[in-house]
Amino acid sequence: EVQLVESGGGLVRAGGSLRLSCLVSKFTFDDHVDDYAIAWFRQAPGKEREGVSAISINDDSTYYAESVKGRFTISSDNAKRTVYLQMNSLKPDDTAVYYCGIGLGLRVGFLESYLLYDYWGQGTQVTVSS
Image 1 (spheres, rainbow, N blue to C red):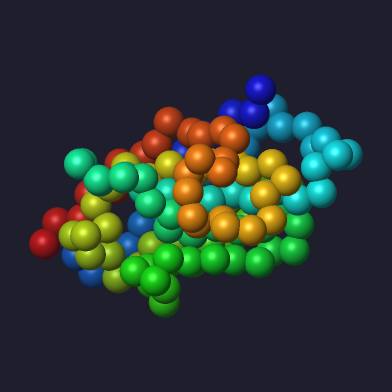
Image 2: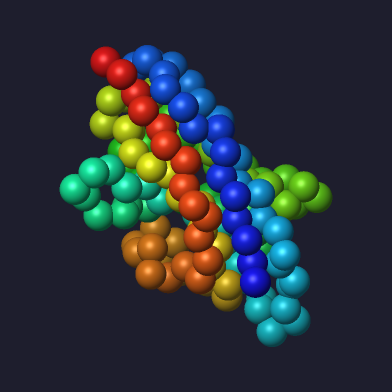
């Protein structure tokens, strides 16, 4: 079974930066799966899990929520099976548990719903103080 492990969360002041990492392991590329995507979603207390950013591994297309455009950057190192989320100019509203997920065969709607993804990591807490 695919495993994803997030790291890099922590406590930072507003305006600061963090880099999250998502290591994907025990993943066998299936010949029947043409595409897959890895995304970062986040969930704040009392709120639904929302899409933050995603990357299509097949063509490196990237996607961002409007709230993080210009501040967050997603990237992948396929050799290391790791996806990164560089978060700059952090705001208190960015405080949440951040999860990475993998969607097998996913081609559209990357940030629409966490239900489109097949496997998730355990999450990493990001706290931004004002």
